[in-house]
Image (tube, rainbow, N blue to C red; front, side):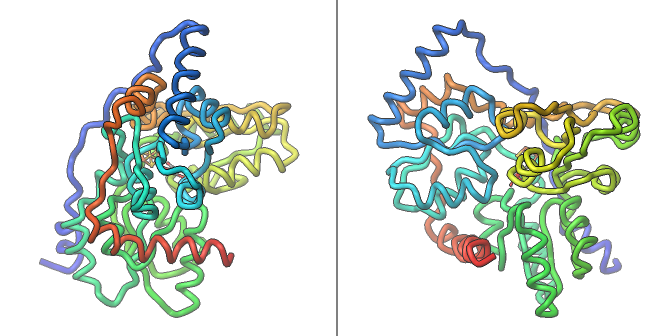
Length: 349
Ligand code: 13P
Ligand code: SF4
């Protein structure tokens, strides 16, 4: 067996089902307002604060805003949860975000509306096979994306989010380091292309971003020549090649606000439109197409796991105290090292 075959076998990416995207529970406006008021009371009662990702339902995001919580990308979610004085963090997003909050604040209680909300990148990178992959390449610096389990982070030298992946890779390249990267192959390839650093990539992917269709996007650009194209770097290279800006969710929102274009085509989860429209109310946002040749539309630009966060399960969680995120303390302490390294690096930059 040659070295490449060994690597692919060790990678052992499991098959997994992508759940159907759940729809928010149907409620009248007065019912919804009553439920939101109940959640606000429960947050006070539990000394809790909401930390929500931009991809969650607009009802979740607006409630986070109204109740003194926070809506952010995965790096800022981690920072906010660590620094806030609340004793309970209610993380509305996907499981790795809850785990990151718990690792950084082991003394706090971390709840999530559901423990079922995971991520295709996390699922594609089981800790055991990842560890074997690292063992095969001891000369490489192990850099993992935040979208991984606590156990995978515990095996890493660095954790990065999309907002600082390029900067960290440049920093390591300047020291002559070679990188072992996991799990998102598209983000890994993008970082390699931008920085020129030697990267050996795990072959995971995001089920949302890999669905954007190049030809259909080219046609949409032709139809709207005045449009700016904003792309999250979890997208395939052919989509990134059509971008005016490539960046994390926060970076894309900032670009929408700062760039002069009246229209933007946005290649990321459509949950981001809630904050993008707030940041640039006079502008028009169009979803990048997921239909076209080879389309499966398993997610249709909306993460099925993010969609599992609803007002109803949020209320139940706060009432019952169920759905608490627990991380093995030993794994947590090991994972804290590369996570803290990322936060320190981000603060300096
Ligand atoms: P951000 O760090 O840009 O928010 O990305 C997280 C994510 O899961 C994107 O799919
Ligand atoms: Fe994971 Fe993709 Fe969902 Fe982000 S959008 S949480 S990368 S599956």
